[in-house]
Amino acid sequence: MTVKVTVGVRVSLARIAARFTAAVTAAVLGVAVAGAPALAADNEYVQYYAVTSASENLGAIAERLLHDSGRSAEIFKLNAGRRQPDGGSLTDQNKLRAGWYLVLPWDADGPGVQYGFLPTKAPAASGTGTSADKGGSVPDGKSASGPAGQAAKPTGPPTAPGGGSATRSPAGVVPKTPPPPSTGKKCVAATVSSRPSNWAMTRLAADQAWKHSRGTGQLVAVVDSGVDGRAAQLSGRVAIGANIVTGDGRGDSDCMGTGTAMAGLVAAEPLGELTFAGVAPEAVVMPVRVVTDGRAADPAGQAAAIEVAVSAGATVVALGSHVDVTQAPVAQAIKAALEHNIVVVAGAPVRGGRPAPLDGAVLVGGVAENGKPAAAYAPKSVDVVAPGMNVSSIGINGTKTFVGSGTQYAVALTAGTAALVRSSHPELTGKQVAHRLTATTEKMAGAQADGWYGSGMVSPVAAVTQQLPEETTAAAGAAAGGRASGGGGARLAFVLTVLVGLLLSALLVFRFRGTMRRASAGGVDELDNDWPAGPVPGEANDSVSSATGSR
Image 1 (tube, helix red, strand yellow):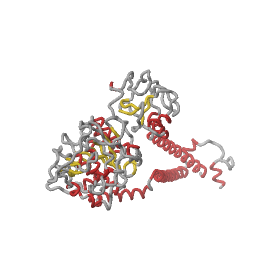
Image 2 (cartoon, rainbow, N blue to C red):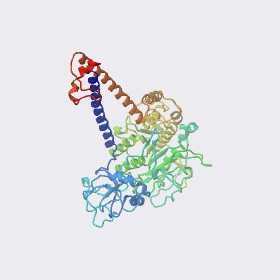
Image 3 (tube, rainbow, N blue to C red):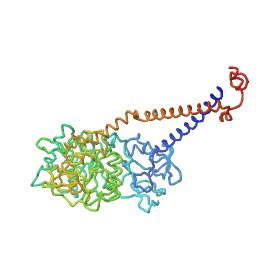
Image 4 (cartoon, rainbow, N blue to C red):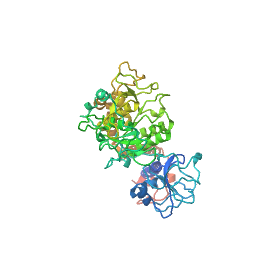
């Protein structure tokens, strides 16, 4: 029976190994398919370029429109395999056809860049690529050019643990030189208050948190009217940003003052006699302009502004009063930002209710010095409150002081606090930071959990220093899980290998026992029928029984 047992074991191992190999192969193929780059949908607004000549290539296009030929790979991933109007598809970076449309990264700019739904027909005969596709059709019959300022929906840069995006696009980089002064008929006069008051900063006492955190390494996107990059107290703190209103240009200028005031509350630094400081004076502000003259931006433009902030690598997004979170496109853009591990801070709505996709965002209500709400916020919509009435900040066009009222200033103060937390607790996810903001508030007199004040007044020092039992428990569980699994894909593979090995061992034991029982009963191993008949190498052509007897 020795030979039969050996043969049975060998066949069993062969079958199990074959099945295991097939399963692993299927899993690997599944991962490969899941990891393939997603193509832009035909019903999404995108930035695109119409190829004008077969002599063009992706490297030259990337150099011209992205100012970096090395980014040709990004364009390739956005377009590879997508069906073009002539039925072809992109398979080679150096082989393009006139009339093809190439989806571009959101920060592309220059001649030929267009916005809107991706056309389904070849461009007009002129083929210049600089005008809308007059002869083509687009989904739902909408214009191919689309509204100005629409950017491609981002997938977002790689997400760093707890700290938002690992890389930043040019929009999130501080320029070496400031922008030119804001000029023109649309620029409002600088605002000066006869009653400047610093009660907001006194109330929050953010300076008590600065020995623990000053917001270093955080990029806070301010979605409002832009930010005056020439403001002395924001020197070196304002990124290039983006202009959603026109779809081109920078966001680091401001004709209204509200965006600059928000930026000051986030990141202004004392300078000489200008003693005012923001909550997180070492954070960087990235302005995303959605308004220039007080008229509200359309919902699609508001959503695009949030998407641009995500693509630029923002770790915190502060939405001004010109962004309506009750609009479906805006709520969906916020949901996408939350999925990219970003802290989103917005004003609580004053009508309707809290949209479901906003769960995980921080909705803020503004209050006056006497505690009265700045607006009639929708029931159960406020998470936290912060000063929002008679709030002092920095002005535009050289104005030293700006004093204003509105929920957007409470949003800015809360966003600055979020930057402090992200800098001091880089291990926390965006949702954990949002939870910390609400769990460490200072209770307001007479406040109810579902009333006007949410959980209470934002407290920068408590948000940075207070220990939360739920975070300690979660961290301990994660550490224990990490030790058990070893962490990473390689460790997971090791664990799976061990489990499979144990399973194989168990199967072999049961198989061996069953074979021995059948052998002792004079039975025949059913696997013998699968094994080729013939002599066993190295032994005589005797029967198994005689060979066993001779031994």
